[in-house]
Image (cartoon, rainbow, N blue to C red):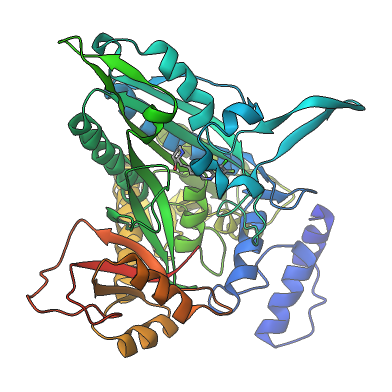
Length: 516
Ligand code: 86X
């Protein structure tokens, strides 16, 4: 984006076309602002463009790897502060294990690694020398951590052991990479806990899942469904998997938002994580593991973004309010700038994240587009008229609503508007998501709904063979349909209801659809 171009384009009158679209294109060409793809027309291209133009991501010269810019990291840190404080209340402690794993340790739990092996990245050299023993880069840390669980846990007094780490992991995926959603390196937290009883482990699985729900619903303003994964879709190394599932209306795909697993005693058998109980009897610990990743941010962009760019929920936006001076030709520019700075001072003292854009080489209109692209929830404009009337003009990013508010009442009103934005972004996303949910009873209805990009709620016999059959009967260019989850919140299932796919007696309602 060349600044000089912008200044000349806004001051010169070389535009000679009346066509609105041609004019728009010209602005785009000269300023680099605006998106050339529309969300509803070309979703994939729109997404790539919005994460870059919104200054969240920069592409890197390794496919599937992305630079996370400050605009992204600020969101990640807000989620991190929340989650970290919550798990500390649960007496979970942070730690850090090494990035590298020996082949030995990686393969200790063969069944767990087998299917994933092609995704593991290896260090094979130091300088020009081939390493005698190649070293793997962690794709997840079960095998890294559990040998030490075995060492550290002796008796019941060593339990529960509750650890978490904030780190990066590498999975060398070969399917189409997408910023945040499927990248070869990503950031996450991984929690790993060990208990003396299954009951304690079961409770924690749901406590963590509730925190994941809150991240999506309370922070990112995205509705999710809590539920249990099918045997086919669960983490194969574990006993059962719970998840929060989100939905992307534009693509008609479900997306796993975060997972909380009960591992049962599978890993404690493999890694010999034993303890002696009060009666002196030996037992195997019960384990959980759970994670959410930077994928959360991609889901947020996909759900809320629009044709003007990102739309950030106030709770996670690093800038909640942007103040823009609007100095007309003969106005007292200094007085307007002073009013902007005073507004910033008042709002930041009241605890809002607020910035002013006083750059003199950009026009107000350019700044509006810029901060809209970056998704700042609220814009405050201050011009000569506002100054005279002791008011500011406030413009919402989510619905473009404009109101004038008296400077005397600034803090209270901004607070109300921001919390209103947070709520209405969630409500709008929920309304859109709910409109995509289709209840079906038969195979024919299922196929119609699937082609209509729906998230399908269907009665199911809960047989693995039937799920495999649904997968193979729906596979094609768009990818096969599978179960997303069995929601904990089960609608009534009248006796005699048949499975939509097999016709056998249905055991439960499950969500089905294509997914990421
Ligand atoms: C599954 C399971 C589990 C701790 C979580 O979902 C929460 C946090 N881990 C992760 N998974 C793998 O086990 C895995 C293993 C290898 Cl070797 C790999 F290359 C990729 C993997 N991907 C996922």
